[in-house]
Image (cartoon, rainbow, N blue to C red; front, side, top):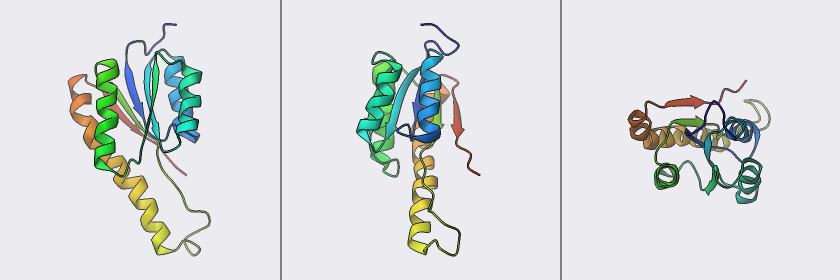
Length: 141
């Protein structure tokens, strides 16, 4: 299948569910290669299967770990020769409002939602510059 993203490679964080999963599938449907990342291997495997094993690969790990972020980028380069785009969709949100959210849970959310985004973007940036790629981050309400 050919499409608007044919030959382009995207790393999608949080691809096991929600916005990340939808983005990974949309990129695959448009002909792009996808490195689908997240913590839940079974769900990532479902995403890869829906796209096709030649154009998608799963990579598990925690985006808050610098070595994991680098390994995900390396996987894209090794498998597809480079990186054209990054979709930062990994994230968590605590149930309830500010009164119900304990400081420890707030710290965990910030660690995932900000540190993870920073580390993956930092790891990907040199490769994105090489191919004049781009970065997208999820928007929450």
